[in-house]
Image (tube, rainbow, N blue to C red; front, side, top):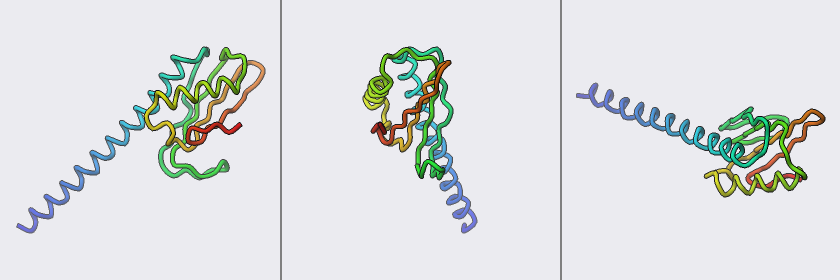
Length: 127
């Protein structure tokens, strides 16, 4: 009887852990896919690529964060980078659940002449 109770308890704990892992993976995929879809639908770029999506404690030379996302946007058409970053940020706030929870969101705008970084922390652009 005791052995059955131990096995039953282990089964319950394993089930909870598996469910939590699968649910966390789905949330990550949903958020990163939602961001990519917003960027592709609303930005006039030749190519948009997700470099990095890290959820968990990350310590780097840029500081400490619990969620970090980086995208590269190549050969985009815009007249003013700051206005474009504001426009994209507003779209992401309005269309992606949990976007403001991202500690560090970086977009690298790349063309033949230059590369410019825009960093957004919890929905606020660092100008």
